[in-house]
Image 1 (cartoon, rainbow, N blue to C red):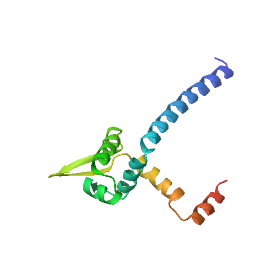
Image 2 (cartoon, rainbow, N blue to C red):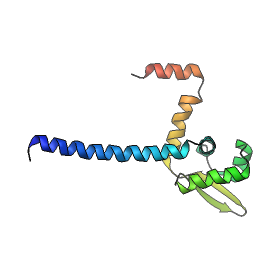
Image 3 (tube, one colour):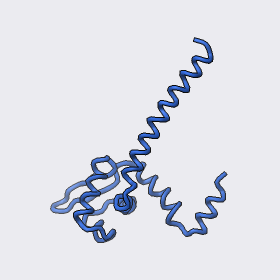
Image 4 (tube, one colour):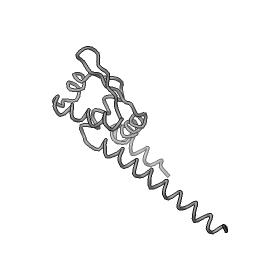
Length: 122
């Protein structure tokens, strides 16, 4: 095998890995692209909460909240535990916490701080 073939083979493998990574990232972002699921994830980034706490904090009615919790749970992004009649949820995927922290820095900080941070990006 000559150097050109070895390089092309390596690029092909890298492209396949890149495509797989992009597909995984796209699926991850798709699960968090719903505003209610993003709200739930933001609330859970601060720690475990009961369904009732989430409902009161976020203003999402129980049927809709249950649907969004089920989507996040099925995606493996959160886990629930039952304590008596209450169900408590917490983040299960560390990428969610990192994603929420990044989104917070980009969208929740005062605009001047965001502008200053963006100006530092090369």
